[in-house]
Amino acid sequence: MVAEFRLIHTLSELKSLCGQLSREEILALDTEADSLYHYFPKVCLIQIATNRHAFVVDPIAIKTMDPLRPLLGNQKIKKVLHGADYDLRSLFRDFAIEVNNLFDTMVASQFIGENELALTAVVKKRFGATLNKKYQRANWSRRPLTHDMMLYAALDTAYLIRLYRELEEELKAKGRLGWVQEECELLSRDVGAGDKGAERTLTGQPPLFKRFKGAGKMTPRDLAVLENILLFRENMAIEKNRPPFRLFPNRVIQDLIRAKPTHRVALRKIQNLPAECIRRYADGILEAIQKGLELPGDRLPSYPKVRRRPQAPEKQARLKRLKRWRGLKAKELEIQAGLICNNVLLDALAEENPKGVHSLKAIPSMKVWQRKAFGPEIIEVLRDTA
Image (cartoon, rainbow, N blue to C red):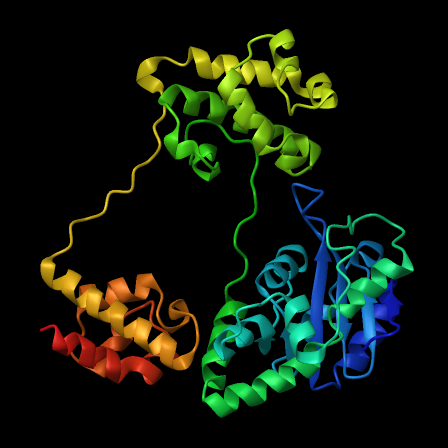
């Protein structure tokens, strides 16, 4: 276990480190960000470990991560992460860094059949070690960071290489290593998704209420009030660079929708609304509520209903048999059914009804490993419904 680490906080140190690490065959990698504290999150620490040493890189102090780009993009060096998706997107967003030759130990654990996937649970089960989560919700953008905080961050990479070696052997024994390798390759390619943009309006953008729990049961008038409150909060969050929930949480918005206060006296009666929030945002909240109340009836929003296209009986029969096959296969392999084929893929298979394994190449959502591992069985299932 990592008992100590080396802090990298100058460009010369980073260049030297990257030269040193370029001779390694495998690296463990993790990041810490400030998404709980800022609307526009940023990577605040990058943790890298070898078999023997741990390093904590401070991108806030160094400013440029250019030396890391060729190192993490090097196809000859294995990079081990746990739950890599957010780390990959963050590194690409902030530094245009692409991570190649990835092994995601969370993905691997899924294909082994593990149900508890958090790193703390995996490390506890396999190695009997407890990872302290004391700083899980820390503000990593603050400086200076304490020694304990940086050690905590370094420990997240301490077991990854050992975990990788165990999982790789187990996957080989089960004949699933190629499955995970393809999943990781696809994961490393899927970066660069757009970030949050500038100020939004009620028109021209998907309504914010679509992401609000319980909105589907609200009246059109309540939705209008809700959307205006959400827009106000979103724009204030952008202006102040704080997460929307830090301004006032969703439970407060639920209370506002029920009460619909139109003046400060009524606003102060909202149980969960802090006095500081009233002081800062009362005018904006009241204006948002008023806008929703005054919106003409013919412009009131409605919650989008999912309209499913009627399925032909033949397709329904194929889909039913495919789902039954998937369930049996999942029990046989002792993994989650969605790993074998997700619902999007099953629907495409039932719709296209391919006649042979070679035809499966035309199904865009089907991965190579799925076609090789299950293609003949899938074709047999589809033939049985013909």
